[in-house]
Image (cartoon, rainbow, N blue to C red; front, top):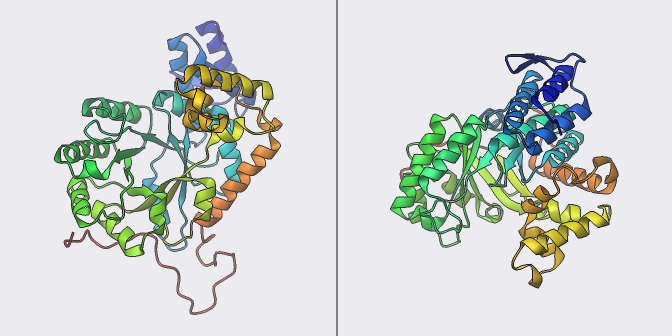
Length: 414
């Protein structure tokens, strides 16, 4: 850890050319990997808040100078709306996830796709910290694409889901996320909340604020049932009339719905297209590609897979499980895998920067790469305009596949 501001500034001067706190160049052409690791570690764990703040600004500025800027997924959705388009893959991350971000970036580069959205999944983490760590990971891995960061707000207090917050608190969180360079946002609501006038009004306010902040919104409707029909879609249309979301996110099992039902839900929300959320990598791989989606959010269950891996240091695993059992009041009645699943992000956060050495987990890294590659193949049915999904030129007279967006106006029949 840096012991003083002078020590930190000397280290920064070796790696960055700074002008009034902004990075405008690199003395060695690019920052050294070990230096980036040290800056990221200090940006989270150094006890001096002034030092942490300065390092976070420098990391974001350095990544932006190398073309790794925070961006809105709205531009990518425009590209995906054309024939032969694919889908974005959203990866939920939590804890002090610098190493985890690096692994995802490395695997995604090998899979030949950079269409990743990094969603902040741990509410206890500052958006400023998350954006700085993602910038540092991008610098370390020389990420060749924009940084699509997304903040996921907790449910409304007036909703029926547990853990809801009042509207003022959610508006403040949204403002902080926008200030930390997040250009993407997920808002959540339950079907019961949509049917309640107060919840709809609060959702409208958040959607308006997000639009004013220039954020691309995913509106996630949690667990609509088979019986939810026209009344719920009318309520959805009312809630989103003034500021429609970019994408409507539904649970992954909605991919099994009839196409007409999916289409009506998207049209009711005024969204540009459909997002699926919540499936594990294995479940998502098993779902049939009934309807094209513009984004799929997959739960990789990082903590359970990493810590239960044979490659992981056994002493660290025992240490982590002991810590979780001492911290969780209901831990005595559950097995190790369930305990890790319930407290995934606390586990990742507790491991700090000693989560793993990427070079020491070759099997885990290969399995992650294979999962990402398989998902990208499922989500990206074509490679480029003028080719088939397998790379051959289409035969003469073959019509191109239909665009993945439903372009009709919002229906008046709902």
